[in-house]
Length: 263
Image 1 (cartoon, rainbow, N blue to C red):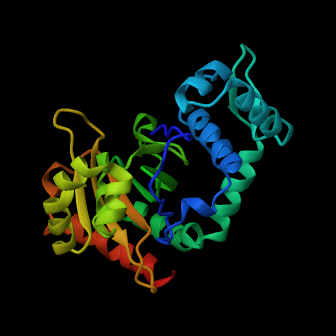
Image 2: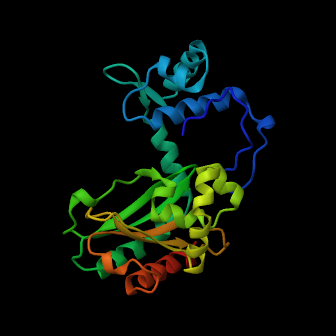
């Protein structure tokens, strides 16, 4: 989602839920993050001209921002030209992940869950929502798992196109959902969100005829009651399990509850 930073924007809502008054924000910092946002979402290096066009900001300003980010190692110039994310971004990403207790709390249960499914082609993951994307925090799978079905840590997906993302959207306020997916998509998801809540935070994903895309997700409820993560079981052989009363769905819910008790 590319946001033109020179346009009037509605107040934002960070993941923690506290709204931010745009009048209290620095335009230069906002533009810097907008530049980073474009770069991180592009598969190829991004030029100054492309950034200026996408963000509606003068090329001179974009150039100054990039020079600053390059000096701080947040971006670097690719061998063939254009800008890509730099190594220092990894430090900040890892710092956030380490500060949250999610990974350390979830990993023992994820490993136990993966062992319990035996040699089935299934992977256990934990994920969080960041803006309009679902980000995988960590995954565990058995040695027999086909690597074609394994996503790397930090993999990103449109939040409303994933089981985990839709499950977490169901527990956001209507205003937050609109900010994440837009008015039209929020209306489409409204009734489905009620079904997810009625099922205890369980959601499913299936793509007919495509192996490896079936999934069962359960919202992780920490002790403070504010869900910000989900547990996901995905892979091959879940076709007959994609309903709230299935034994596998109950198993996903149980492991999500165990993780939540540690948070």
